[in-house]
View (spheres, rainbow, N blue to C red):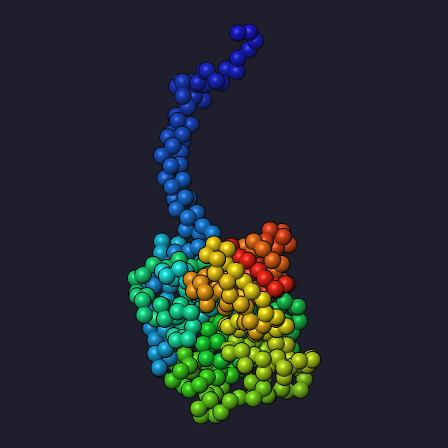
Length: 375
Ligand code: FES
């Protein structure tokens, strides 16, 4: 071998004082690092698994009925490994991955400042897809659940905060119908904490059926409770509340579809009320026409009616087909089209995913007369 050899590769340098062939400080630091690194690596892997794919493990820490008729149960969900739960803001929801494989979305209705627990509330719906029944009848305190999120499709944008103008220039109005109170609850506490001029109307079939009444008593007469059995159905003016003629209203609504449709029609074209809303159930099919769908793997075919979703038709012949939001934004119902031309109506898929043949069956349809999906 010719030339010079890098001395550092063969010869251990002496210590700074020249007494040791190895520097004791470096030697100690190396030993500590060797012990520490495998432990840190294992911890890191655990932590990574904890949030893999946005999935977080939670344990049911408490469950309690929160409506007099006991058809609404609140679940307190604590981090399964003790780590702080991901931060969230009023209006957020999580996907709950149930033991049956069903995925359901529930609004977070606890305190956003408390990262040790989440709270959700679930109404038992006998005519639904079985998710709420499973939660009511099968889940117990101590059970582990994977959840995904939180995500926020219904953010509270407080007037005056984003645009830097006077917060008192607008009034805040909240409209909740039944279990629609869940995303509104943290909005109320937020608006109250920041001293906004707000009011709310809370409606439902009866006092026994609407959740969190006792918790809302603390807000006094800022909240009007109005039930169908005592007061009749509310009209749009009653939902919007009094206008002072000078300040516009920013209105947040969550409730049944007829309530939201009533408000949308009433406020259409009005410049004095800014409407934000979230619906819990699928929107009606608009401008649909009938087509046939075939399941490539089983060979089963069915007809998708002009006023029903592709997902609804698939569920008739394949009840286990996954779905969640039914509004085209979560992606749970995604399938691959192997034949036919889709008519995309979602807000999630990219052009590349559409070109690749993906379709969200809860909202999208067929541009022709026949579609075959990989199911
Ligand atoms: S169920 Fe959420 S996008 Fe279809």
